[in-house]
Image (cartoon, rainbow, N blue to C red; front, side):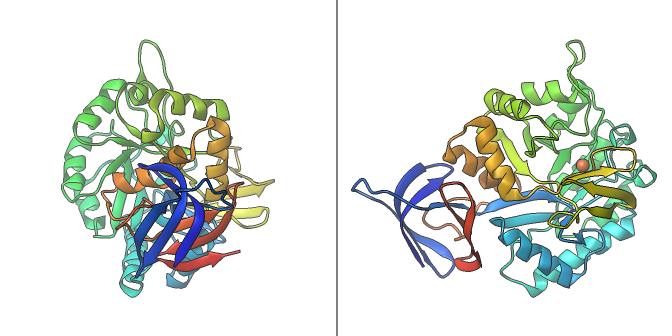
Length: 369
Ligand code: FE
């Protein structure tokens, strides 16, 4: 496959008009145009979403193989070529059975955008539960954690102030699984201790955590004063556009990862849905619990990318970092996330308004308008 006269956007090499060729699933050539030519389309690394609970009626906690396939196809239409189905706080057997579905899916599909599973909870702080079911949030239990750690687990969100966190983090990170800090009431010192133990990532910042005080910097102060990478939900609701811009200005594009945190109601009409055993009402595109608590999102990844650009005024090079490269690298994956020779041809072609035109997985078209 060859793309001629496109605006190539690479998170390291930047933006330039040129041509990109793919051979047997890999980018085999990237050439800059010598002449000053105009372009119609933009070619970027396929998007990565490490935090999504579901879409189009599919929920990570209850899905079967067919539903996971449907979810994957839906995400191709948004340019996503890597994602982690994400569970909520639930019983060990429920989260383990989701991980086993993902394992079976990966065994049956050698070309897929499913990267593994993200467990968000149940070892989080009930004080910062957000839309998680409080009856399923639990104390750290090393035996229980061990029983749920199969090879498809790629990420675990936990609260660092919980008793036994450091021992648990050792058990988990020794298996090569990163921990993301979230749904937490941690002090600055708790965050620092977790950082020093190798937990350098934060879940949907600054949602589900305490706020900044000048005598107790808390989670937000910790993020601004230490090199944490942060997931952010870029819907303009979970954080105001001005806050997103502030994080971008203070921390920079190297430290932000766009996530959608969508639930099964994404891509569905208004109505009643369920999230981790709790009733969710979707009205005018806004999902809430019965008490009005924001219940995740129905945000489309491609919309989040457009939002990030308009909230921050960033370059496309920065956009490639926050929409793909940072998330992929932080999971220890090195073979994709760039538009450069030798990398997997997981790509998204966009028009000048950043609307998805075509999505490619290993050089094969998986979505086209
Ligand atoms: Fe959450």
